[in-house]
Structures are given as C-alpha cells and as structure tokens.
Image (tube, rainbow, N blue to C red):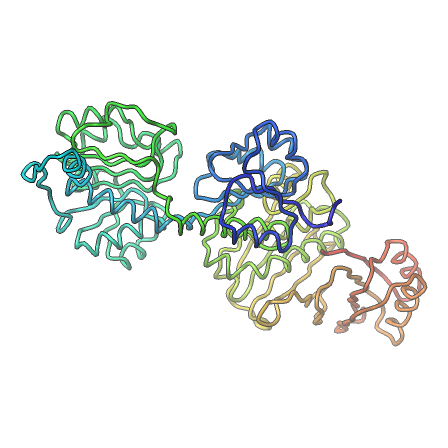
Amino acid sequence: MSTGRPKVLVKEKIAEAGVSLLADACEVEMGVDWSEDELSTRIGEFDGILIRSATTMDEELISKGERLRVIGRAGTGVDNVDLDAATKRGIVVANAPEANSVAAAEHTMGLLLSLCRNIPAAHESLTSGKWERASFGGGELYGKTLGLFGFGRIGQLVAQRALGFEMKVIALDKFVAPERFKELGVEGVDDPAEIFGHADFISLHLPKTPETVGLICADSLAEMRPGVRIVNCARGELVDLDALADAVESGLVGGAALDVFPDEPFTEHRLFGMEGVVVTPHLGASTAEAQDRAGIVTAEQVLAALTGGVVTTAVNIAAVRPEEMEAIAPFVPLCERLGALAQKMGDGVPGDIRVEFKGRLAERDTRILALSVLAGALRGHTEENVNLVNAAQLGEARGIEVIETSDPVSEDFTELVTVSVGEGEDRVEVAGTGVGPRNVPYLVRVWGEDFYLPFADNLAIFRYTDQPGMIGLVGSEFGKRGVNIVSAAVGAEAEQAVMALTTDAPVSDDVIDEILKLEGFFAGHAVATA
C-alpha cells in the first residue's frame, strides 16, 4: 500500500545513519542483494535511487525509471551514470564530492611516503624472513618539489600536508584563481612543462575528460626530470600504463604509486612487481569515516531533491561552489515564483526572459537563480517535468533566451530580483525579495506598483481604478466559490491601482473573467506559483 511518501531504493550499502535520514521522510527499500534483472524490472517503482560504484545507470536502465527524479551516487565519480540520459529526463544526479577528500589526500601522502622509504618492499622482505636493512635505504620528502595536476579540494588538502613536510609545492589548475594558490603557499603554474621540468614528485588530482586522458604518456614522461616519482589516486585513464612501465624499466621514472586503473578490478600488468612500484586496489576512499560520510551526504542530497530542497552537489546542474550555493539557495523558491508569475501575466511563454539581480545577490554566482526563473516560467507548459536539471535544455528547444544582468546597488532592499517578459509596451515586470533570516519570498512590485506581500501557492493580481470597495468586490466573488483571501496588498501611486491577493485555494480563470466584467477592473490573473 502506498504511503504517499517518495519511494527510494538504496541499491548499495551506505551508513545506517544515511538510511535513517531517508526513512524519516521517504519509503525506503533496501536492494543491496538485487540482481541486475530485478533492478531492471523494479526500478520503475522508485522516485529516487542511491548507488555506489557497482551499479551502472545506463540509458536503458534510466529509461525504465519512469518515476525517477534523483540518482544519488555515494562517492565522487559518476562515470557509472549516463548523465546525458538523466538530464534529458530531468533527473537530478547528485554525488558526495568532498566526502572522500580527506581519505584520498591521506592515501596520497601514504603512497608518497611508501615510495620514498620503500615501505612495502621492506615489509615483504622482513616478513619473508630476511633482514636486508641496507637494501631499502630511501629518500626524504623534505626539501623536494611536489607537482600537482589539479588543485581542487583533494589537491589542496595534499598541498597542505606536503607543506607540513616542508616540501615545495607547485600546481596547475586553470579553474583556480591565482589568489587561492597564494593563500595556501603554493606556486601556481600555467604550463604542464613547468611541472614536468621541476617536480621530484608528481601527483594527479584531475577528473577524466578528453583533455586529461593519457596525460602521463611517453611524450610527457620524456619531459620529466630523471628519477621523478608519480602518484595517481584520481582516475586510471590519466596514465598510459605501458608507457609508465617503459619509463620505470629505463630508469627515467624512479618510482610510481597507483591506486586507480583504467578497468577495475585490475590485477595483471608488468608494472606489478617492478622495483619501485607500489599498487593498491582503489583504496583512496576506503576509510570507515569516508564511507559513512559519503552515504550520509548523498542521502541528504536525495532527500532534498525529493522534498523540494536545493541539491547542492548536483553534477548535471550548473556548477556552483558550495559556499555560493549556501548563500543563494534560499532565493531559489522566490525566483521560481517570479518566473511563474511573469509568464502568466505575459500571457504566454516569452521569446526572452530578463532577470536582474540587485544588491548583495549581484555579487554572487546567480546562474542557478536564473535557471530557477526559467523553470518557473516553463512549469506546466511542457510535456516533461521541468526542474533545474533540464530547464535550460527545454528553454533552448523553445527558443527562449534568459538575459541576466546584475547591479550591486539596490535602494530599497538588500537583495532584489526583477523578472520581465514580453515586448515593448506590453512587457510585464515583477519583482521580489527575501525577508528575514530564512529569506521568505515576498512580492514587492507588479505592473510598476510597489507593495509588500508574502508569496503563497495561490496568487491573484488585478489592475483596477483606484476607488473604495474594490477589494470587497473581489472578496465577494471569491466567497461565492468558497475561496478565502489570506492576505492582500495594494499599490496605488497612479490612477490605476494594483491589488495582489493570496488565497487558500486555487482561483480559476473563469472567476478572474467574471471579476474583469465588473466596472473598474482592467486586467487580472490567477497564478499557482508553487
């Protein structure tokens, strides 16, 4: 029997705290022992699914998830999810990008130390009954140069730890501001050759992209300093293993430590067993703390997607830094409501939507907010369910352009969002702001008139002659149909006033038409903004 709550499948094992979090608001079913056939047969029953790396969400499987609204990946990589297929269907794909960061950084340092001090080989020798102390003399990290490819969360954590060993750290990442390198005491470089030519150790912290696959290859290895040691805890595809093996055999590379491989499980390669090579079976995220953290974070994201919250780690929505998302997330409902209101008042989906952010919002990354306006405008006007994942794609297919502007100066409000649609004199403009610690959405301007009204799911707007009794006439018509006015606000700076009302039930277009037949009413709209 259906409980009316969203239904979530936990396909792979996560922390019990994550399961409990989901169970508070969702109907949860555990499918850790399901076969591929059972998953394919039953996935259509669920609104959300939570997986790790062992489950592949390909296009065929996603297409069978007719109710799916979110795919949660408990971990960093999403290579096992067809993002294009999910995006086309408006399914949020969320991961836990920072849950494994500390574990991966610590494993990287462990591999660096293992290479320097020959720890694995010395352990194997001693446990086999030999005392070969002279054979395992090593080197020190102190004073050496570490070159990082990628300076995201994990790269920065590795840099901080390497600096603790008094290493010199240089790093390449075109998407990191120069100031960030300086803040952490790292030298930022623009050319891979600067790392290849100066680093004693090279550590990879990059995603798998067409540009990064095969970064470590015969050509790049030839540019490196003799005796360089290489660590890869990122993606197996970044390293050409055969070229690396050749470089180790020739002595060009003094050692290599690998935790990831192009295909996994991966148990055979001539690198394995070579002197100076350390390999581990993808252990970067394998700490109890990281695994628990990944499950809990992903459960939080799945829950947010299914209960109207903002998914801060969605990988198929415009990437916004976590601190930026935290600041703008409260304004998403406001922007969605303004988009829905402007679209309805403009009598149709517009050719373009203009969005202006004023005040403190102008200093933020507002791409998600602009998408929210578009999603609100499109909602109810497409065959597909519209959300922040597919709004841009659906808008583009319909020739709708979102024009975004910003102005740090806002005379009346700390933050102000203005949305306009239409052409020329027929262009309609609405504006809103967030009020209080939780930034509750308020409507503050319609048709050029200012007022102050909290948004609600059901809203009615009228333009009329400024004379007594007009709100009473509307209330009377609503009352005949069992609709109560919850709150009202009036803007009356010109001869024609504007009335905005919230109601406890939807107002049909027929009711609006009847009111517009009354003397003194010129325009009116009923809008469901939720």
